[in-house]
Amino acid sequence: PLPGERREPTLRALATQLQTHPRFTHFLTADAIEVLVRSAPLHDIGKVGIPDFILLKPGKLTPDEWEIMKTHCRLGRDAIELAESDAEQPVEFLRLAKDIAHYHHEKWDGSGYPEGLAGAAIPISARLMALADVFDALISRRVYKTPLPLEQAVAIICEGCGRHFDP
Image 1 (cartoon, rainbow, N blue to C red):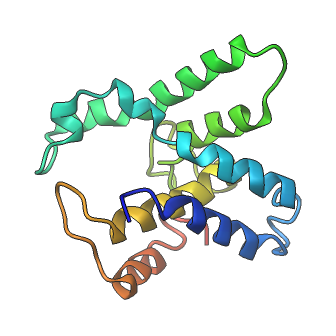
Image 2: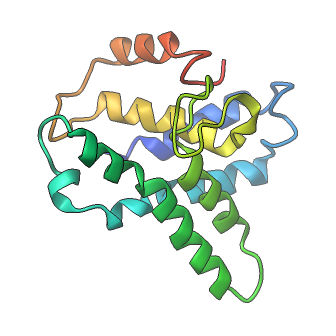
């Protein structure tokens, strides 16, 4: 599979599994899960505004390049917001996509970006997308890394529980 092909099935499986959890049942209705999965492909839409020399760099980004890369969250939110403003009526999947694009790099402990949100202040949709996105990144080949075995990816995610990810 190509990078990203596992993201939506992973997100659907995660959301479905959490559907009956008391903290998520209010949000994760069957309809909301469908909207969430339809919104997910737009999570990195802001990367269209990032120069290729950064996106395709095979090695570690410099601090300046990393600061540019982090702007993809704001760029994505702004692009989706512009699409929303052109719509004749509210479009639920764009509202959710905007939250996902903007907040999917926030971390449970507040050390993420772009806003440094922590815990429940991070929208549920973005918390779920963060997990699916990291899982996909770990198990996929990238220009800068080889794919990790499933067991190692799961171990890394479990280590991030309560720090990077919603416990």
